[in-house]
Image (cartoon, rainbow, N blue to C red; front, top):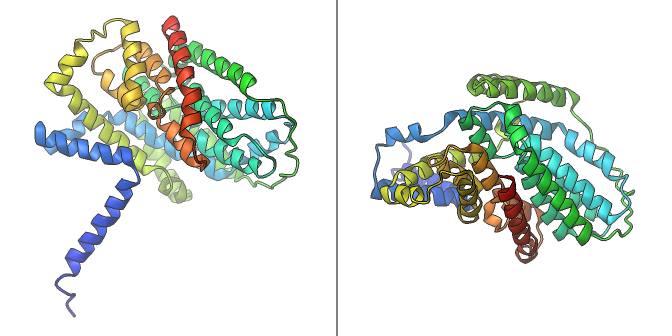
Length: 380
């Protein structure tokens, strides 16, 4: 029996509506798709040439890290560790210090987004045990993951990109970013000491049992170290193949549940921003800034991030300056201030589920950005 003549168009319409619904939920993805279409109309390039604009080494490294961090997350180790530690805290300020430190530490190895997915839900669950200043805690956690992720190439996408394009070793990158990371985390603790009271808390009631998948956690830990070594030697593709095939055969949910949209967004960022940077008038405008000194490259990263977020700013400015350290300092500081400076800020606010977050967030984040910008300029 033949299907109705209009069955195929109906299926296409359904697929298109599902795709549009998905894109509509991701404004960054929607903006990038619209920008790509506009660029192809105004300044068309052969579609076959667009993949050459992508830094595949960075994308492959990001894909491998997403799989490994998802494995650690699915093992339950993070929640197990956090709940074991948090019940030793008896004051509001001490809890804030702990959550800030936990968020910053996790973000150095598990990326700022993954650290948020571990620490913000923990904070919300603790709020069920005792009244907490949730809005303020989430704001400080968002700032903490941005500050802590500065330290390593694994901490955030812009660091990963700059590390891969710089050619320096993992250790050299960490050593270069250590002063800025330490200064900003110290600033955050001073601010927390001022804004959180030492009010007593009783969190002893949350004795939930959190099972850990020990084999998964152990394999992920060993694979994590091996993958970093391979990525450091510019063999991220080989590492990704081993990690991807291994988990598909053993624990396929690790591969299936990673943030594939983040990879797509990153691919489109390379295509769109490098296409924009190649436009004659844009190239002339940014080139006229003369990013030939570390301080100028730093200032451009810190300011441009406030308008287009720090990952796109890093990708765009790398076309005009090869001073990776100054750019890393600039886009790292650019993650504070206006919420769009870092996608982690938007994720944190969304995870909190709290209304009226944007006002309090900017009351803390913008002054922090101003002071951080001064400190970063001094260090540069």
